[in-house]
Length: 215
Image (cartoon, rainbow, N blue to C red; front, side, top):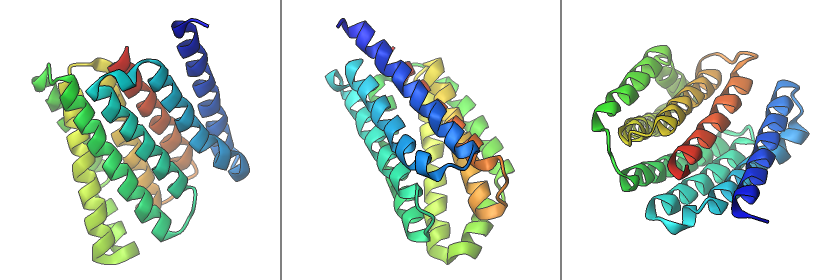
């Protein structure tokens, strides 16, 4: 099998698993979600590896970020506060690895970082109730953890746009949307659409970043 064909088949499989996961979230099929959520990230890791991510420093940072995203996904399958904090920590580390990947790939358009700041500013405006909600839910420790996470994802948004790679910029923007919706649903007011929107934007973000860095 040729390499492009293998990558194409892996990408199709990844898209199918992501679509199945979204269906499971919409239909509240937790049994299917428990399988498809981590499976989607494993499949995306396979796509990145087949596309040569292991051959460059930027690609290796990308693979590390995806692995920590997988860990975060598994942790967030549980409903306990402890699992949420562990998942938050895993995603925070993963975002730092994304930043390392973007910096290593090259900040070819530093001026584009303003797009990332704009996305972050919109997120903070929409999610102004997140930190008070986190404080009510877990006190100062959880508030500090969520604030640190917001700072790191802001750095990821700015550095992602600064690469000058449009797909990466769109991907980090979707990541900000996903995390904002997730936090609103957990700390402010859960809505019927928060989980589907969170997963749709989350998987879209990961796929766009991989495609942007490895195209």
